[in-house]
Amino acid sequence: MDKTILHLDLDTFFVSVERKLDSKLLKKPILVGGLSDRGVVAACSYETRGYGVHSGMPMKMAKELCPEAIQIKGNAGTYSQFSDVVTDIVKESVPLFEKSSIDEFYADLTGMDRFFGAYKYASELRHRIIKETGLPISFGLSVNKVVSKVATNEAKPNNQLKIDYGLEKPFLAPLSIKKIPMVGDKTYQTLRNLGLRKVRTIQEMPMDVMQRVLGKNGRVIWKRANGIDHSPVVPFCERKSISTERTFDRDTIDVVKLKGILIAMTENLAYQLRRGEKLTACITVKLRYSDFNTYSKQVRIPYTSADHILIPKILELFKALYNRRLLVRLIGIRFSHLVSGNYQINLFEDTEEILNLYHAMDHIRNRYGDKSVVRASAMGKNTIGRMHNPFDGRPPIVLAHRKQ
Image 1 (tube, rainbow, N blue to C red):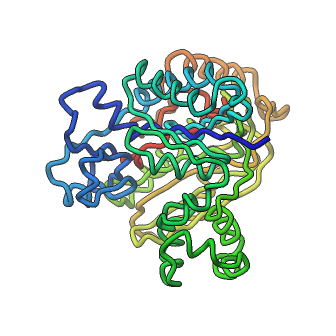
Image 2: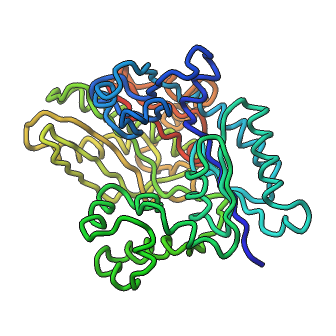
Image 3: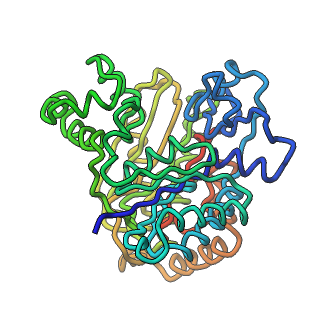
């Protein structure tokens, strides 16, 4: 049986939510993201596109290109709530779906043509989402995830497109190579330097030529350009790591401040591990200096999720890493090699008081939010709050880089 894969994408999601909350923003140029000079555009309205603005662009540059644009910082909690409403509608409407980001879904409708007609069913689902949420949404329907995603992007804004079986290559052929998922700016420039502009040219090339130019990624891009994709719709993808980082509005050399932020980050991530019943065996500290040189150090440790074990290890890594005495632009922490498990008691070091303390703090955080209890050294150090358990299968909320 031929696959039938639906791809749904909420159009300019953050902008649409802001307009839903404030109708005065309708038809106005909108920029959502970090508001400082080092802020990044998380989302922009179609009214700004004609000025050359796009998501991921520095906010300062976007404002220079479109001075009349209205800047909005955005609220992760609000966007998450609207996303959950859409998720609930999708969940009760399709047999199998994958939430690939806060505003993007895949659904496997294979076999539904026998009963409803997949395109008709997808259309009804889209109209229901629009009616119940007031948010614009587009979809693409084809035999696989890649073609459906490209079809959605071609259907936008607020429209739908079906690519019939066997017409995947003709549909893709006239498009720019940049429309292929996985072709970023760097890969695009490499391909343009080879004289490649349209997908059709890649389709006419032997696969091994692309592989010689781009390695294993060349093979994947060639297949996608030819409409070949066998990746399944995955309803749940277990996270193998959890991380956070901060970019500063002003580069700093204040070691006390840097250590305080690292402690706040570690404390928050350790709580997330315990919240998701996870343990880490590998920790990494990342450091970017003002000259944009980036360094990292990692170390393997016994499986743990305890603040009092992780914080000293993080500070040790930072001490070994920070040796240039230059201004720091960014710091970050990553916990990896995660496994399922509860807090591991150390028979020689842990006391009943420590165990009770963790239990009490986590109880308060579960009830009042993950930033309701913090160490004194971490007070005033902003960290990204998480609205839900990061290990519950939902994708992370991706906003513009948070600034401090």
